[in-house]
Each structure stands twice: as C-alpha cells, then as structure tokens.
Image (cartoon, rainbow, N blue to C red):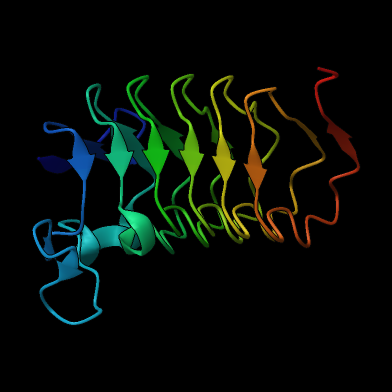
Length: 178
C-alpha cells in the first residue's frame, strides 16, 4: 500500500509498505508487459509533483522492473528518500529527473542500479555505494552535477556506458586495489 501524509514540519511524505516489489499498477507479471500500452502508472501519479519525501518500508526488495521502473521519475520536489535495508534492485529511471533530490542512503543489500536510475538528479550530493553493489546501468548517474567524488566497492563487476556522463564536478574516483 501507499499513503500520502504530512510530517510535523509540513513535509509532504509518501509512505510505501507491504509486499516485496514496487511495480506499476498496470504491469502484468505473467506477460511481463504493461496492460495499457506503454504508459506506466503508479498509485501516486496524481500527486507525484507534491511529494517531498519518500519512505519505503522494510521487506521491499525491488523498485520497478527492467525498463518499467520510473516509480518516482520527475518528482521534482522530492528532496529525500529512505530506502529499506531489504532493497536489492532499483529499476530503470526510478529517480530520474528528481532535480531536488539532495541525499539518499543506498542500503547494504542493494546489488543492482538500473539504467538512468538517477539521471539528471542535479542536486544529489555525495553518497556511499553499497558494499554488495554488482551492476550500475547505462547513464545511471548521468548529469548528477552535485557529485564530486565516488568510491567503488570491490563487488562492482559492471559499470555500463556513460554511467557518470556529464557529472562535471566529479573530480575524484576511487577503485579498490584488489
């Protein structure tokens, strides 16, 4: 389920809970296709431009699926996201163009960041890549101009094309020595 509420500081918060995967409401898991053509729909679509904060409940392992991610795409007022430790997979374009997103803490079990997952998150500051991260998709952090340094864990096996393209302030990158 999901609910929109206001925090004590008047922040508009979206809470998501229950189940293990966040898929579009019109996604058919049996056919692996959208039921309404190519228009992706989520329960919060009618107020996505009002969301300032998101808390995703423990137990959820996946946000989006393959190219049907886009769960919070263009939530331009979204400033913070709290992800559960159970999260393993962030789908394509999940937080793309969330231009106000400033900080995110990626959980330790996360192993997959899909293509364009954080594309154009221009306010996103530095964060730590989780120790079990295996895959970073194409253009995953493209145009994240707030990034200045990045340290990769030894678990990373695939960094796809242009993953950090146009991150013009990214001046320090560290890879493990092993």
